[in-house]
Amino acid sequence: MLSLKKLPTIIYILIALMSIGLAFADEEITEEILREGLRFDSNQTVEGFGIASTYRCMASWDRVLHSHSSGSGVFTSESKTLVQNGVVAKRTPESFESNIGIGLQENTSNAYSPTKLDYPGSFRSGPISSLWSDSTFAGNDNGIVLKARFDHVQALNKEMTTKVSGAGSIEELTDSKSSASFGASMKLNAAFNGTGQMGMYVGTIKGENLDALVDEYYRGTFTISKKMEIAFKSSLLQDEDDWLPCCSGGWDYMNYKNKEGFPDDVDRVFNCTCFSMSK
Image (tube, rainbow, N blue to C red):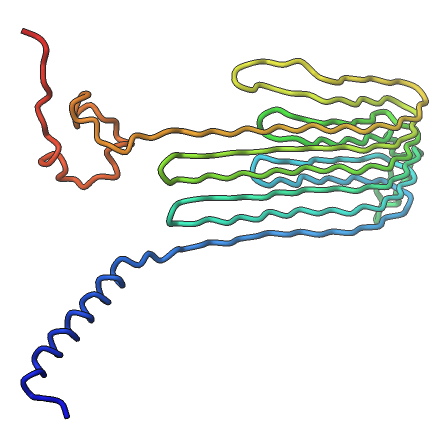
C-alpha cells in the first residue's frame, strides 16, 4: 500500500520527468522537404503535300532544345519529344537538387515542289515556292551549343536524336557547397541536296572567348553520318568562418550578408573596442 508520506516525492519526480520530455520536444527539428517535378511527352506523325512549318522550343532552367522546319512540297515526319525536370529542396539544413532532361527524336523526309493553294472566294494566286530549311540547336545559357542546319534544300532525308541533360545541387551547412553539370548529344544520319552546316560551339566561360570546336559547311548533294557530344561540370566549396571577427574590424566592418543572420540589437553585445598598436 502506498504511503501518504511518499506521495509528494513521487509527484515531484513526475513533474521533473514531464519537464525533461517537454525540453526534448522543444529541441526537435522538423525537416521540411519540397519535391516538385514536371514531365512532358509528345508523339507525332505527319504526312502530306502542301506548305508546312514546324517549331519547337523546349527549355528547362538554362537548358534549351530548339528546332524549326519549313518549306513547300512533300512532308513526312515522325517525332518523339520528352521534357522532364525534377527538384528536391530541404529547409533544414538548406539544400537544393535538380535533374533536367530534354530529348527529341526525329525521322523526316522532305521534297521540294511549288504548291498552289485554292482560296475560297474570288482571290487567286500563283504557286507558292519555298525551298526546305531544317535546323536543330541544343545548348545552354553559357554558350555551349550543338547545331545541325540545312537550307535551300531540294530533298532531305534525316534521322536524328538530340538530347540535353543537366543536374545541380546547393548545400548550406557549415560550408557552402554547390555543383552543376551539363551535357548535350546529337546523333545524325542525313542525305540532302542543298546546303548543310554542323557545328559544336563554346561561348564565354570565365571571361574567355573560345572559338568553335567544330564548324562544317556543305553545299551540293551529300550523305552524312555524325555523332557529337559535349559536357561541362563545375563545383564550388566556400569556407565560412564560424566566429564573429570583432577585433578584425568589428561589427561595423562586416558586410550585410554576414550581418543578416543576427538580431537587430546584436550591436550591444558585439560592440567591442579593438586593441590599437598606434601610439
